[in-house]
Length: 331
Ligand code: PBG
Image (cartoon, rainbow, N blue to C red; front, top):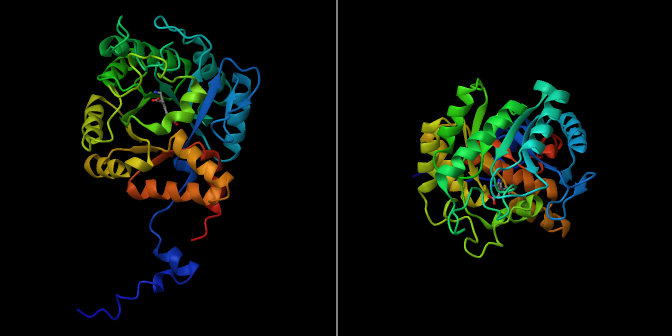
């Protein structure tokens, strides 16, 4: 074979003009979702020690944060409530309901709010569902019933999208059913359809005070979140959630599961969101703090890899910088 022409691969890298021409992966700030934390226990916006640049907001400061994010071109959000009181049944969802109502009253359809739907910030034991009496197992059916009621309350309060992150079986079908039965057939479901049991949720659990670690009989989420050692569960569970009525699906964390992103996109063609989670975000932030990476370029490089693998949208704690950073990309 004649290799004279093809062996020179450096011509297409020689300058920014040709690098721009041969580029075929693009980032767009319109694909980004910004997570928000609204915390009932704070009196003013309180910076999080575990997540650089991210704050725990009051309802009032949350509105200011959203106004400023809108100015940065970010209009899609993932809302996490941190309620003051925790219990193990009969949960009080009124704080997040109040927050959603305030957001919708102020911003209406200017913003799109996905409400994270899970019980881990509400339970004393920190698990994402109800436990049996012996505190040794998460009850599936009973948890799904509570999650469906919660989803309905979130929809009534104005959520545009329900995003269940609890990982119980059958929750997508139950949520779709209760939403439709109550006139919320236009409220979308973003399923955390491939959520792995991961080290990289550490800073988030700190922020939401939702770690299950204090419960000696059930110390982790391995009985409901996926195992990194199973290469098929991500795809099969995602297909199951699509069949149950999910409108969008998700892979979480993002970087350690790029293969799962690629497989799900190729196999399902479904709208796919990659969640670059708290520990992944903070790892880059700490590297940047030590001046071992350039902050914006490091985030951009990761985001590009998620797009390349097949993600349509990206959840990132740095989403509010996306527009500025993307405009500054040097190819
Ligand atoms: C709640 C939930 C978690 C995250 C999103 N929703 C934590 C967990 O499952 O322990 C993690 C988000 C992040 O780390 O950025 N179930």
